[in-house]
Length: 441
Image: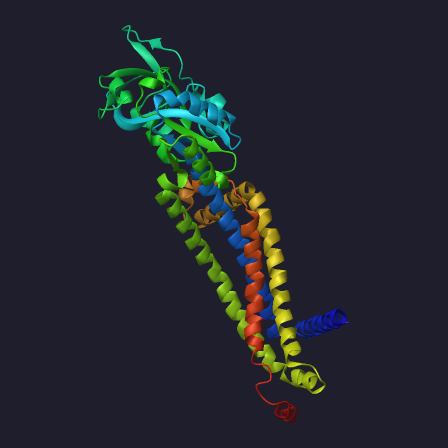
């Protein structure tokens, strides 16, 4: 019985709200209502597109860092006599996707023509491409091959070991596949550095590219020596199947190997990922201001509508309608405005995100033709110099990454902003007495 009464009350509120909307199809109220709906639509669409593109932009950095240089967990100080047991544990543990051994040091790289550049030289397992699918996906080979096995000989008879360089580092050194490099140690006291205590000759076996420029400009990979027990600071980079369970897995590894030092990716990348989070939050805050402006517009519109409908409100109250039910009529109207705008914005936002490459291509062409048209009119001699903005091609190649929880939050926030504004405006209902309103009418 109570449920039927609530259902009947809801249908009455919805019916009256729809009737008020139909009456206000013309005039200032109709324009304000459409403007509010478009504002919600534009806000939801813009926020979905901006956040999705930002996710794609940041994920390129994060994926490159996590897959190529950082790993989910790092295990250090694993004693030489425990390394075989550790590798067996990593192979059998269900939560571990792969564990790759490496060591690294800073070195000075010198090309054949004397060009120099500091680099982080990482000695890594030669079969890392087969062992680690994430590494193979993010470290894309653009020239040569990721082959760290075997030696070659220079024309002078010197033995050359293979290395793989980041594309920006290779450009800085002006080297290509097959060119020779000298590696110089910049410090001492480490087994890997001791190998490079004198000029060590390498040849460039391949050049790779990632989504993070710092890796492209500073990383050089060489093969890990087979006698790893002679390397003092050997690090195991561990990738997990479930990133949310990193902390629990770290504790489990620590129990199995008490002397090992286990660190999470959040610890040694805290500042970088913190900066990305702040950047994303600030961007979202700026775009959310769209909803604030629309909410203020809806609030003022609803206040005017409440004032103009005071006779109808008084009549319904005189006939027995509760004040709360009358208020709910205007709250329902605000909800419907928010719902229409948010759903339309959601559909458009998803469409643009799915077709982001085509959208930026069309925008680039449209901007080019507009610019070309005006140059032809005002400065035809410079028409040949007009070209498409290359940044649009960069944006078009950034994949938009959409996360369900963010899209749902944005859509609900759009609906909530309109509903809250209507609720705030409806609080002024019947500030005057019913008799006064009816007498004035």
